[in-house]
Length: 390
Image 1 (cartoon, rainbow, N blue to C red):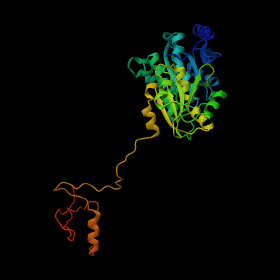
Image 2 (cartoon, rainbow, N blue to C red; image 1 turned 90 degrees about the vertical axis):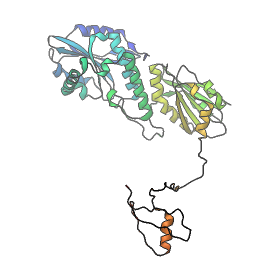
Image 3 (cartoon, one colour; image 1 turned 60 degrees about the vertical axis):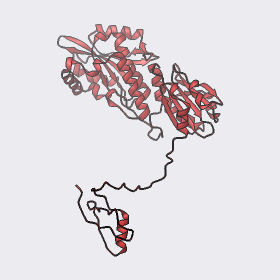
Image 4 (cartoon, rainbow, N blue to C red; image 1 turned 120 degrees about the horizontal axis):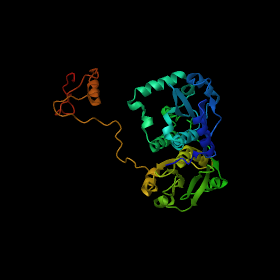
């Protein structure tokens, strides 16, 4: 799986200069026009002065903008390179996911063997703070072989992990600090999750406004332009045939107005073979799609997520609209079952009433129980004694 982002020729050239020129402390890298591009290099504050040079990085860091930092770290008589990914916790969901999923590509295309370690930071202090670097050094020395779990993960594992966490964030709105997946969320959204605004064609709004019972509108995201478009608009679609209208090779948003009801179901499908960028765009934009549908007068009361159209059966749709009901008799506060002979039973309300009717006041605590008589007549009072259950 690839994010579709690659290293530009300019970055290849800038990286060669960075490797050969030991006066350069850091080479910042960003994503621009679907490629990894270099920014102006940062020199050492003084020759081989690592810690004094850290503060200079504050000039290239922004509170909400992810960035890659290729850092030279002098060690003894030589130096090593560190690939640091800076993704601030309040950056946009889409930018976070794209940078997290592309960092393995950056190291691979520049040459993984050229980097001694990789670092993930979500706060400026983790980048420019001397103590943060010393803590990482201590942590690294305490791990087997000098590598952290992240260093031992393969490229595909890192990409999948980044996407998985970003999808979880978009779904639940729960920040995850360890890989920088955090951010600001619309907590008022009834479906939860983060909302990312997308460009929308006028055709989309018209199709949603015209959705009638038995109708289906399918939306797709055009990846190059990051715009939502109409992929299909059908009428008279039977619930059992909805899955046949959903592709199995790429993600889709499908809105289905269930026949003979006022229920509109939002169906989000994302096949496992989808590209990283597709998954990122659809995961971070689905709440906007739901909000946009609401703006066109559609009240979405049901939402389904699936990895394959085969999961969207007529039976499942029916259960969403008509959930199974418990038709058994209403029992209210059900009377406890009579215990087996020889066991104790909490007092029943009828014993209290019978005793009160003859002017006898009895006070029970939670540890006082009555052993009921199984053969008394209705006019007889059962014999009772107070016992404590163990």
